[in-house]
Amino acid sequence: MSKAVKEAARLDLIKQALKGNDKAFLTLFQQYEQDIYRTAFIYVKNQSDALDVVQETAYRSFKSINNLKEPQYFKTWLIKIAISCSIDLLRKQKKVVQFKPEYERFISLDDNEDIDLEITIRDLIERLKEDEKSIIILRFYEGLTIKEASEALDIPLGTAKTILYRALGSLRKKLKGDRVYE
Image (cartoon, rainbow, N blue to C red; front, side, top):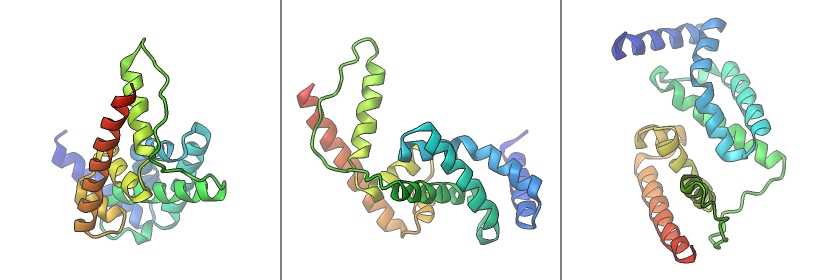
């Protein structure tokens, strides 16, 4: 099946869901469930809370499917809801996500340097401001374009670019700084 045919079938499902077809909505949601889970996990940092966010995202998106203005951005719309649910859960649990730039010692994992690098990158992303963190997650973890990320976050494209470049610059500085301590 060609990419164009798959996209047409997906848009048809979205249109059916917009008309109230529950099965079409469920089929669509299941296609993006793993993406939603990954996004939620990055924010809430544990499986149980991430699964709660997926459930809440399913509920909110099902209830507000009529608010979807652009069917081609269905995934972006779902990710935006997942981010909102994640942030709401963190606030409800009174978990304050710290974005302080102080440096911590990393546990040395000589057996597998890839894990060490992944932990370092996650730690660095955690130190970003919330808007920077969101744009990095959407752009690089979810694979959205800068335009799609700006729409998901309801910010102008120019602002999204500025935040992205500022975040990347901050990550570069922090990565260079952390290498000094290794």
